[in-house]
Image (cartoon, rainbow, N blue to C red; front, side):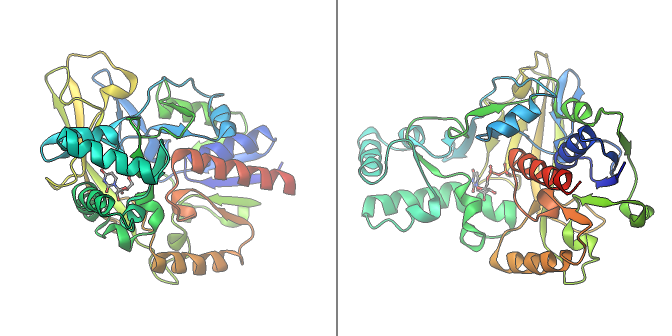
Length: 370
Ligand code: UDP
């Protein structure tokens, strides 16, 4: 049997571990944390499933990913919606026709919606940075309104950068939506939350006689020569000891508060683009419809990642960081025994489904190599 080391017990590591164990490989999974699940880790507190590292909503268009995860969990039919507070009103995000109706007088709202429909198809997604280039004066007005009230200050808080300083794909994740669908991911066929939580789902993925898990264990405490193949889901620059310079990451801190009433807010996630230091408030009980007298909310504060102080959550996609990452990729070619995957290994702003998809691909490559 070939011995495989997987560094990181998050969703990428769990996917590769499960696939390779089923293919007959002997797998050791290590993680520096004291729990499995990576940043998808959730835990029931006072009867409420609390997402310990921020809201995780599973959504995908990739059937293979949905079917793979469905072997380890059932999903609720939860369909995510987000509201943002603009001018004191809660409006749907992605910004859509209903958001316009809430924020503008009926005649003006009609003009703006008609303009959008004259330029874009119903139910299409228009990235804000693209809408800003519209030649039509009314669309320019709308673009500036949405940019200023929804994107600019939220993005400054979240990344410490303006939307146009980041890769376009970041703000394009939350486009302006030409239609009335209030869901956050109207374009994804499969959505839901694992009925018994993400941690349980991943416990099931790791539950195989060929998989051993060691928590509280760092990569540096092992001898890489003991393994035929290493799958590394930590930061790629950290792996190389920052030899070419540090890649930047964004981190988060969460202020969790238990409140002695059934509900705190009208929705699972409410964004505050313009007020407060936090970006959003999560009310966890909405995800699994937990029936409790109390509620638990989390204020989410973005912050810079600093080694040894907090955890890296998001790679920061800019032209400079993409170039530096490419240099690390070149360096990685000299180490064919090691495969880098996941948000931190690939330095990509993956959603859970994209992380799983990438891990499935890599597991297949390893299996084909024999
Ligand atoms: N964004 C924004 N205002 C919002 C929601 C999102 O400016 O109300 C921008 C912001 O730059 C954010 C990005 O869109 O980082 C992606 O948002 P998403 O909700 O996908 O972020 P995540 O849930 O992954 O933190």
